[in-house]
Structure formats: structure tokens, C-alpha cells
Length: 357
Image (cartoon, rainbow, N blue to C red; front, side, top):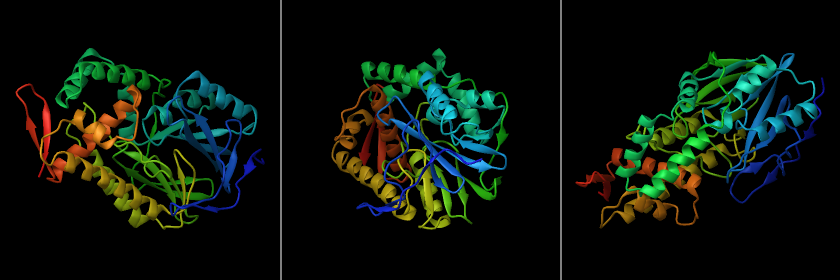
């Protein structure tokens, strides 16, 4: 069957040191063949980050879908438009979800049920998705309140963050009751291609990436994005996690594994070439934030709440964005504690402050 798709345009150059194989992303009702047997579609998200990329890989007599979009009626309508249009008669035979965030796993249940296909995920990410669906208990809300209090967040901000979080995490369909586990180092055959499974922490706990060395194609999920830095956060369920340390180690490992001319297919933004350049940019970006924190804490100990505007001074943040900013700030603080670049001081009121070493 010949896909009803647009064709990728010629490579363009950019001042950021990356190269982009296509000038414009697909429209909501369009599908683009970004490489032979790989279809790229883009679904809308109701956030400042307003889209997520979905890839369909030719797989024998069917197609493997990578990620699903968020679990709301608008995304179901968008998929329906695609399956009635450019993806008409596509048979989905396998679903791979890269990680448990709702914009990637949100419609896993809907797609699996519609096509009778099996869900493939890493074990940690499947269990994390199940956890997200059942985390609204009062005990968990209390733990989150205490977590934000320790980091100096006001009651108003804390309540806004709790409301934002519950709304965000509800945007998923019910997960399939079973799944096929994939793990770091596995080899998956998709059509004529063989992909190595690479997993990495930081943005998610065990995010799945797929690398076809023979064809020089890398599906990076959210670990390496072309235009933005993926959120790397710490939350109340694991308050002392070194998420940023895990992320930086993952980037360093990817830089050794991948060729710089690999075609990167990311979860957001646009496909690009120049992965080693982008990895260095991302690592430098986080080091710049660490430097800002060190300078702010050089003379007077600061809470995480006081450090949020130091790092995110260029942004006006709503409750949704403030939650991510707070989680990311705490990830930097935890990393700097592990690296012995900060020390922490607990006040009698149970509030943490940080001082540069």
C-alpha cells in the first residue's frame, strides 16, 4: 500500500549548528514521510508546548506507532481525521510508548483497543503510568504539600501546583491491562530494520529510545530535542532523586553511541542532524543554570522557591509552568548537593535553604 503522505523537503542549515531535513512540520491533518517507511504526524497539546510528534514505522503488513498523544477528545478527533485521511487503511499492529508522561501514553488504551494491538513499554514506565492514574489519594497530596513546603513554596502556589498536577495526570485513557516489556540493550525488528533499545533517565525514569545503526536513524523521544531542553524534575515521590545527574549521564552515553550525522526523530520540535552538537548544548544549558544557582547562593542561603525566579527570570509562568519550573529547580539543587557544590540548611520550621560551597 502506498501511504497518502507529503514528502520531506530538502535539508536546510541553521545558525544553531544543527541541520533540519524539512522546513515545516506536518499540519494536523497531514502525514509526512520523513524517511523511507517512517511517517511523521504531529498532534496538538493544550499547553505552552503545544504539540507532540508521533511516528509510524512500516512493519511487515502493518505499522508500528511510536507514542499516542494526550488522552482527550481533541486528540481522539485528530487521530480519527488522520485515519480517515492520509492514514486511511493503515493497520496498526504494534504500539510502542516511550515513557509515562500523558502526552506520550495518554491514548495507549484507546489505540490498543481500536486496533487490537499490543502495547510495548519499559517496565518502569508502564508501572509509572499506572501509578500516575492512581496517585490522587489524600496521603499522596499530603506528601506533595510537605515536599513543596520544605522548598519554601507558599500555600497559594502549593495549592495551584496540586490542582495543575491532578488535572495533567488525568489526561490518559485506561492503560491496557497487559504489555510487552522492552529493556535497555534489546534488539527489536520493525519491518526490515533492526533497532537497538536505549533507555535513559532524567526526563522520565526509564525512557525508551530506538537506534537503527544500519540506517543511521535515532528515535530520541524527549531525551534529545532540537529546539528546547526537556524538563528534568524532582517530585515528592522521590524527593532526593538526582534526576539531573541521571540525565547528564544519559547524554554522555548517547554522545559515545551515536554518530553525529544520525537522523534524530524527537518527541517534540523537528527532526534534525547534529546530535553531538545538540547534546553539548543541552549539557552546557544545565551547567549555566547551576552557575546561576551558585552565584545566587554565594552569600545568603536561598530556598528553592527563591531560586525559581533566578533561573527562570526570562519567563512569566502560569501554574502549569510553575510546577515544572519548581521541579526542575529542585533537580538542579539535588544534583549540586550530590556534586558538593551546595550545602543544605534546615530551618526550625522545616524549610530547606541552600548555600554555595
